Image (tube, rainbow, N blue to C red; front, top):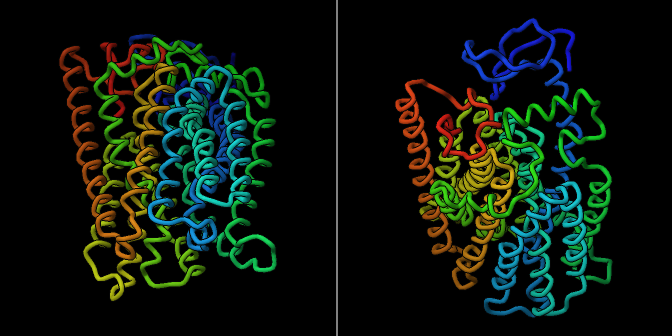
Length: 500
């Protein structure tokens, strides 16, 4: 493969150095760099193609996924409990049951996604959870809604883990955080859009259905339509995209080989992939996922109830959830872009946890009825600190796993584990504690604080371990100096350096 002009030497992190040759070749060892020569102009054009063709579709898909997962909070404000005759803890049970199959089935669906391609499995999952959302319109009692929520949890379980893996087949490690953030911002936008949509739908009074049933009908039908388009549209991977030329496919493959995967489009090996759990850092990551999950799910599921304490009516409460969710999306983008620019992850994850902790502590500590503006600002801080740690944490450990199978497995356990904490969130927000929900808010703040501590500990350990590896080898190496094709065995490779 050759290029005509504008040649630069690209390290695995994207740093570039001027070079006059016109081909992709291996560099000599004496220049201190291990990466090949790549045409900077061609690479930017290729990445721009991915940004335009892949990210918007994934963002829309995740928007509908988030809508279908979080619409119960809006429906509750419009009388869902009264219509279905729910009493006691039944609403909390309905919220909780979603997360049990969500965790149990995610690894299996993620493995299927690796084997048959995320471009096929993701739209099929989306079609299923769209259909189950539509079926909510027909439920008449607690049992019916409970059953649908169970199957909804199954069909949504591996959606986010597969999207994360899917994007690692298109983007370098140093490009990933901001792309995942743009995608994940769809969840915050979905929460905001959910409030706007609920605001509009709840003004429908001429139909034969209860107001909240129209919400599920509209969101479910939109989900099914988007899933059909995605099944036709999405490519299997960057090097197999039909909209690329042969030269672009070769470049896409090479990018992944030096700065994402040890073996590109590697066949899934179950035994080898599960060896990821032999690394102590994997368990630390899972512990941080648990700490992240409680504030994440509390905000996603109960923000309407938290805002409701400000004393507004049903329609206005849903409308007032829009601004905090939009600001959460903006803060996510700021932290993700800053993290990619700095090539550092853990300080920005810690910052997100800190925002969450402060937001909940403020809300618990003040007299909300007398300090409405301060309370509303605290709600903003809650959203700032939930989205960003999720994206950056997933980016953090994916950046450190070159083996594609191991990457899929850890992600398929980590993300659902964070979502499983919705069981905790669902059961700490008790009706008996309304409208203050002091025990729930204090518990959520505690999980955020612990997540902050664990993140700082793991980040500091990675920095220290990198220094020890440099000392043992008598050379100072950075992540960008080692191509991922040499890192199949992860930390077991002497040249391995943590992307902290």
